[in-house]
Image (cartoon, rainbow, N blue to C red; front, side, top):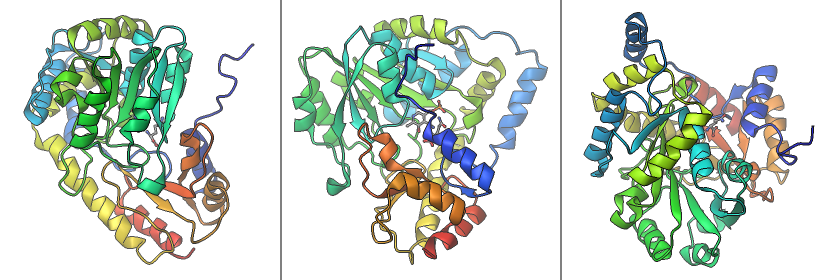
Length: 379
Ligand code: PMP
Ligand code: GLN
């Protein structure tokens, strides 16, 4: 077979989780909780399965779930999406991102991607015939976005700009000033915004999640891609959604109907019920704030350096005071030798820039986090 993706290997998340399993290391690499979701949610899935909700859902998702998402989005962010034709349920944010790219990219279109970039972004662009154009963020200015640089990357082939807030792996969140700059840069263009907001509720120190869709001029051109996996500790259920104005959603749905057609029905009914109680998603903010703070406190006597994550369930740490080994080799070595698995940040850069930073996932029970921290403090 002639590979369509000759430069693509196995995702780092599979590599590191497998290595952690083989070596018995504490797995702070791949982003998933090691605790269960709410028993109430499981009961709801059971209930709907027993009640016969086991056949294909409508292509766009069951209406009660689309209505519940519309309500939550309006209540939290003051933005309206019609459940009828502006909200689509998909198989996780991964599918949302892929379907957006399938819907909008024509051959050789360019998509602006900030790196470090979550690893599925560039393959999504390239498999759909596009080209990623990078804006490189670095620790030298705390991964802040220079909007003049973004502007300089725009050409007549630019089709979209991809954003992540809160960001994986840096934990950075878009500010109102970022959003205003984005609106300024995109004024008088037809460029779409693809906004990955899977960590919308995992945001710290009193920050408010800001979506580009909250800006009236940006909403018209924005696809918001969300997921229930992170919010409800259900990454394995692979359910997410895409919010976009009617015309954009219509194109999005054309792609979605050929990728998965529809998503598992009983889970959709369960989330529709569960979303009715706002505390079920609002409580996750405090839950992860405590985890971040505990993890940081437990590594405070280590030789690592860090800036506390603003959001997401990842904490990046610099190990430059400990060794100058490459981050990839070090992540592998420490998994085997000290029994703590992490993700090297270089994998999220096209040119594998090595800033000597590792990413630890703190969506783990306190016992695991404390044991991992003890080992990290010995380094
Ligand atoms: N975007 C980001 C930034 C992520 O971290 C992840 C992984 N959790 C995804 C998308 C994929 O989300 P899902 O599991 O809903 O497909
Ligand atoms: N988003 C998760 C992470 O960043 C992993 C998801 C996956 O394994 N594809 O670790």
